Image 1 (cartoon, rainbow, N blue to C red):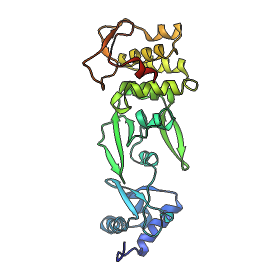
Image 2 (image 1 turned 90 degrees about the horizontal axis):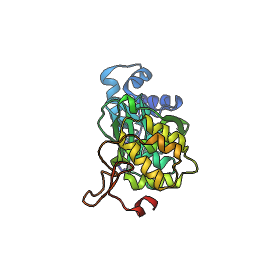
Image 3 (image 1 turned 180 degrees about the vertical axis):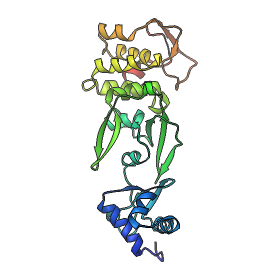
Image 4 (image 1 turned 120 degrees about the horizontal axis):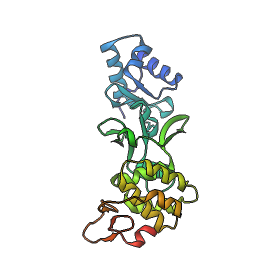
Length: 267
């Protein structure tokens, strides 16, 4: 950083100080206009200079992350991605592989944060943190709660809904092997009855089939729950469409083409 001007001008200082006082790590250009009491090009110049000095980073057009004073003189700072998402979307929740990791159902740390949302949105990368937005229709958009990190709140799928979502979008959750391991690891904490209810409500019959198969093979399925999951299945679905499809067996009970070994399910 030698030779680079890191000194802040009066307007730059005011913007940063006021944002910090308001505890606003993520802010918009409208916030900056209000703080500085100015419009248009003058505000854009301040933001441009702060970006050059590593004091703020663009998230998307008109939205930025502040590098607070505790980031030091060079301004390098990495806000947790979960605290960024609420500034990008109103209706969302974190799910799939990210939620599996959050609930300690897997020790694998995904390089991408997976976010369920109601509208199409391009993936983002903020300071090396990738965010993948997965559009869901209204019937799939449920089963999440509010959690907090660094005194900031965010929405995340419950443990049970995380399992259901993951069985729907296997490519965003590490596949059936990862989900099976999650069920096995947290079977004492997961409400299996509620899990089945959530799956029964989900508008994708493949999810019920996969869940029934896994619970059955993990000895977590009661007769009552089995009746809830089983339907008059038509045809066969893949147990794991992300795995090789050359070798498989038909499971008539759950209407699945099983392309995994028993050892893959039980770990």
